[in-house]
Every structure is written in C-alpha cells, then in structure tokens.
Image: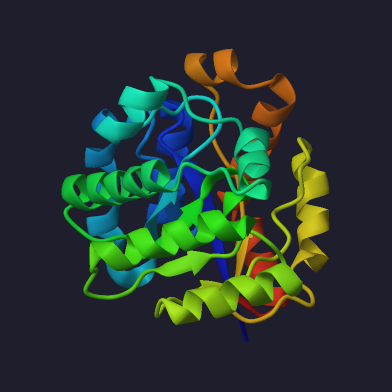
Length: 265
C-alpha cells in the first residue's frame, strides 16, 4: 500500500475555501492543511481550524504556509511593515534579488519568525509541517532563512518541510540543506489535475498516483465559491476549486484510492 499526503496549503484566503477545507479534513478526504497566517481572515478563521484539529487529532497534519510574496497577504513582523508597508514582494522580485544576492535577509528572517510564532500562539500548537507560498522554497538562499527560522522556533518536534519541486537536483540540494538543520523534506508529486469537469477529474485520478514515491505530497485547491473568492480569483480557478471539492467529497474518490491501493497518510 502506498501512502500519499493529500493537502491544501491556502487556508485563510476566503470563507468558502476555509469551510470546504475544514469539512474535507474532518471527513478524512484531505490529510494535510496549511494555513496562511498573513491574510486578513486568519484572526477570524483560526478558531474554527482549532476545532477541526481537535476533532481529527493525529489523523491529519496541520501546518503553516509561510508567505513572502503574492496578493491577499500582508507582512506580520513590525520590521517588514515599517520598511515595506502593507504589501508583500512579487515572486519575481524576490527571485531576482536572490540571484544578485540582494535579499533583505534579516527582514525576511524576522518575517518568517513572526509568522511561525503567530501560528503557534493562536493555534496553541506547533505546526506539523512548513510550506512556502508560490514555491519560493526552491530559492536556496530563501530556504536557508526559512530553515534558520524553524530552528530558532525551537519546536519540540521538528516540523516536516513540503518540497516545492519534484525529484531532481534542486530537490536533492534542499533535502541536504534541510537535513543539516535536522529537518525532513516531504517529496513533492504532481498536484491534482486542474480541470473544472468532475467526470474528467475522476477519470484522471484513476492513474494520477501511479509512480509516486511513498509519502509524496500531492497539492489540492478545493473550495466553495463566495463573494470574496469571486472578487479575487478568475472564474476558471474557482471552477477548478469547486470541481476538486465535489470529487474529493464523493464516495467515488475513496473507491478510486482503494482500487489503486493508495492510503491517505
């Protein structure tokens, strides 16, 4: 039997998404949930997530998705707020700065520490895993800062780290770097197919998990539409979210896992 970690990493973006993710977690249809604590909704949405974590116990993983870039997020640390205001970096800007060795290392380190602390204090538990939004952990200089922040948090049990890339040279470098900080990298596999057609998704999932290594992390973006989501995301992405929610919530999905001898870890 193959163990797969099926998880969503964008809790905190919209009420419809958050409700759908909590439901899927409580029903055992997802095995990992990452919260973005740098969103406007997090101060209101952490309490329902606490309840979900209590209901599921150790059957699922609850973690944090660190955000240094992208929309709908704002800096958490006072230092980053003071220097850069209420907006995060653009992904391309951070990668360019990293290429020229111009990353604001101390500012990013303080931001990572602040987000980790915000999660731990409000959730009253340490994260089971750490991911980084928009795949930025593939940037080795930024990965070093993230691993340093995790080390500084001095968690009783080191959290897993979600790899942003599939097997290859970058993944190997990240794995070695993580090991040097006493951290374990969870390998990345292909995310759930991006389609808005539930029948097509059911069909594609029949062979989707073939060839994946044990414990691979498979990303999903299920959700339900609401006013905030319709304002912030294109209709095509919302259709993908609702399609994934419908399929994951169905009994047919679990029957597919049984046929393929796949267990949600």
